[in-house]
Length: 370
Image (spheres, rainbow, N blue to C red):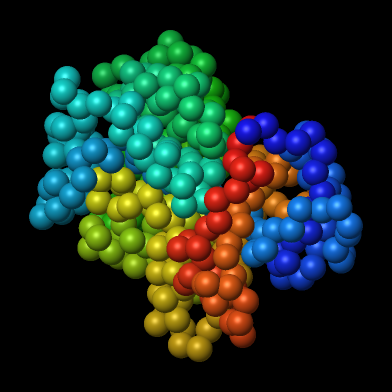
């Protein structure tokens, strides 16, 4: 079914703008699939969207390539399971029988079905791994797929970095280490990320400020063990932190300090991490992040900040349009059933969305990519 070139919608409820302001009874005009106007009140001759129109989710950190391993190696610690390059994960995904493209395709398809329409993937296996990801990206344009590639140690060179730059959208460093030539990576890639302080041993081993000066990352991932002083450094440097609470707890490495991150004014993003052991359902990380903040700071409410960390904040950072405002592609939004989810009756709408929104996504042709 082809989407009409011009469309007018009446929307019961919406989260509007970067701050996700709750609004009721809106009209939205769409031309060529792009929002051209958001106004107050209902208008005539419009299609009625019954529910909550909100930004789609951004999964800011995944490893989609291990999806087909699914719960194997569940009894291993983090180094045995995923450590470069001799872990259980790499022995499986590097085998000739492993279908890497299928793993990525399945992960992206499941993500889209639950309203995650932007995925940022740390792609292992050097140039070959990123090339496989790019082939999936070119074949399936269903969502925004951002590839952060990296080189294997034995292929690291300026020639290889130049090749990788033509394939990947950025560089994803597995961990700080002197074996990587940071200046060369900076020369070739504008978008740079790295795991940091995921485990206690890594936090003790590496100095954050030294690493920021050497690598100048665009954002870092995990940071479970960062202290208040280090969080202030990130805030002052305007470097976002991607937390992966389900993954950290699964691997028994730590618990992200959700409240401290937000109070320090660090831009908090969320990711699901390794697909073999953590499902692509980012909604679960949103609720878990809220629960962590509550147990660390009883009576607190960071629900709005957490929701922004999975929608408008990372989309602005990655240059993705998913905000309910003029210029956004309509397909980049989600519609939530507020009646059956009971969100409509909730006193705190943001808390209700984190807990219940992911189970009540309404499928509409108008919200599918043309």
